[in-house]
Length: 501
Image 1 (cartoon, rainbow, N blue to C red):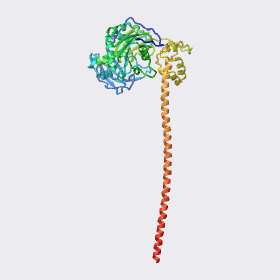
Image 2 (image 1 turned 90 degrees about the horizontal axis):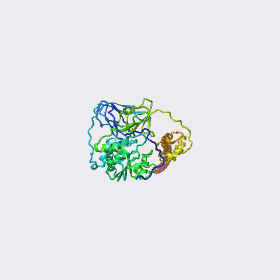
Image 3 (image 1 turned 30 degrees about the vertical axis):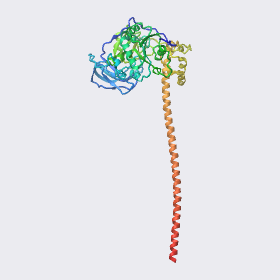
Image 4 (image 1 turned 90 degrees about the vertical axis):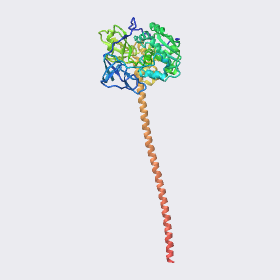
């Protein structure tokens, strides 16, 4: 089935391998911090107040925004606060959160889904289960799953992304090894919703255990499991489609435009839980790894628990650490481990602080061009981004950069190219928005000047017309008076002649 590989990309061995990929159930946290601002969309509005008792799985916040999903309590207990807390974001800013203290009972609200006979459940009901269960893309994008599914038309292929997005992360590998049956049933649910003729589960060729587990439970002729090369960034949606189907998605277009829907394996498992049991998304598997960790592992942990809750279980050393959420390539650095785990927290890197290489001048070696998986010219983009010429950078397809940092990885001068590209994108966006606002303001000013000039001209024309009309009326009045005077004179003359006679 594998049609072709993709040019570029880099092969990065797992820097912190383990002998056995496990999933450890983390104990219930004493408290959880659940942010109301999700990856996209409006901030959710709390449905509870301080002092309320809540059950696990209970909806505690929601919004009318179509691109948002409800927020559920991940433990049972008491709402002790609704205030601003630092959230896991590179800005380090605070956001409004709901804080729940655990009662230690983990009492769940009662839900009823479609059950195992989900094929008799209609598509709209399934999508509503997915929306109300709070499911978003768990591979890191965080896009609401229901919004991706409900607008599907003419889908011929469903692709389940079983690749780890970056080296060192093991959560999807662990999920495929330990929950293959739920994943396969989740694929069948998605086939039913999408109306696709077939589904392909893509697994990297270094995950033989995961492949064997899926093959053991896959008895559906419409579902195939394909191995792809373990090369970063093979998990990128457009590259995956190109490898599996030989279809190249044009710039600015999406997978659904060519009849393909992609979902992550963790999202697929969550969809199974939502449709079959109507179980909301209140936990996820998180990899804890890094040079500062003695025992890298995967933990199934409740959302809102702190990073520290599971980092402490992995035996961190006593050195000073740099904390990174997400992958070693595309993740974000955070200041502390006292942050809440959210739906897109697939990995926590705890690394010993090391001296970073100093940045040197570009030597024009061209290695970045060879490594780019989307066939851009990072060297040219770098010069234009550095000089602030974002229009020229956009001419070199800056918008297609996925910021994978392959160019950073191979650069012998240690130039943070992806940071330049990210900044250039933001600058171009701001410049475009500012220019749009300037154009709107100029158009409003010009229209105002035109309107004032038009009003002045129309008033002058109106006054001239009135003056002309008045002159005409005055002339008519004078003629009428002359006629009357002449008639009066005649009458007077006639009367005088009569009197004389």
